[in-house]
Amino acid sequence: MTTAPVTEAPRQEPTAVKKPGRDRYFDLLRALALFRVVLYHLTGWAWLPLVFPSMGVMFALAGNLMARSLKRPAVQVIRGRMRRLLPPLWLLGVVGVTAMVLQGWGPDEDGHPGWWLLHLAFWIVPLSDPPYAEGLPGVHGFIGENWAADLAGPLWYIRAYLWYVLLSPVLLKALRVLPALTIFMPVALAVAFEQGWITLPGERIPSALTDFSTFGACWILGMAHQEGILKRLPRYIVPSVAPVISLAGLWYALHHDFGTGNDLDSMPLAQALWSFGTVVLLLHLSPSWSEWPRRLRLLAGTITLLNSRAVTIYLWHNTCILIGATLWDRLWGFPVLEQNVPGLLESIWPVLVLAWILIGCCILAFGWAEDLAAKQRPRLWPTGEAPAKARGGRRRA
Image (cartoon, rainbow, N blue to C red):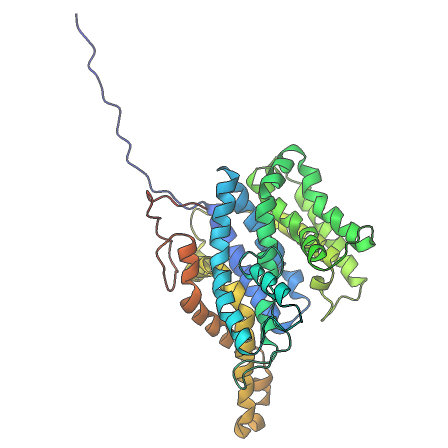
């Protein structure tokens, strides 16, 4: 009796896991969004949110990542998202709240010591807006007055992000059962608020619901893209419908005195419509880049840095702008500059450069908190791929 020779199956070499091309495209969008946010908060140009609705884009990208992560147990994912979000906020709070207290802010500020202490808990878990001192004096020649308001300005985004994370398991289930209704629900809520059909007492709850009605559809669109729901639509639907929705938002804004001081940030419904239309178009494009396009290769390190330190940049950029503007204004004290180059002293562009230099200093000083939150080895200037985690080398979103 003869037996056939036993052949050994060919051994497969492990292949390196490549970063999906779609992630490179999303990294580019996030980097553009951060740059636009800094420029807008410096200039206040009303047309900038029309050119690129940064907040809608950032929420959509976060929603996409959240849906991808929810392949794991929801509690585990929420805990991981909160772990990566909160330490940079705590670091901002340690610096900011300490400085406010040193300038006289304390329990007797509003006559309710107990409430003051209770509200400080929002600096730990920002389910509502963390409190801050109003009207504080600045430091002459270094930072302008009422600096605490600028420091606390970006915190609404952290609060909204946290609520989206907590609601995501429910939103994802609803999206899979009733996709169209779930996607348009926040927009319908924005219409109801605008028409006065829904009114709520107080400030904290209405503020949170307004943020959800304004940008909730963008978060859900990101989840829908990850779930493949948008891809199941005929190719002509998104390019046909999205511009109509955006133009409806633009029409509403133009008929409500759109301009400097009254831009999309002051018009939740217009912002919701414009952001919805733009975001769904950007998600529809989603080119698959196996590697960075040639024109972007020189910027790859910068784009990686902006993405690796997105939370740090967003939290500190307002303060950096205020310090940069204050320092630049000191040059008016030199008569030779005031007499010969007043146009340069009035220009915003040197302040923008100075603000980004200060943001770079914040990345060096505080950015490590994002690495620790992600359970990675701290890096000062992360322009390359993040190192794998120690636990088996697996990286989790």
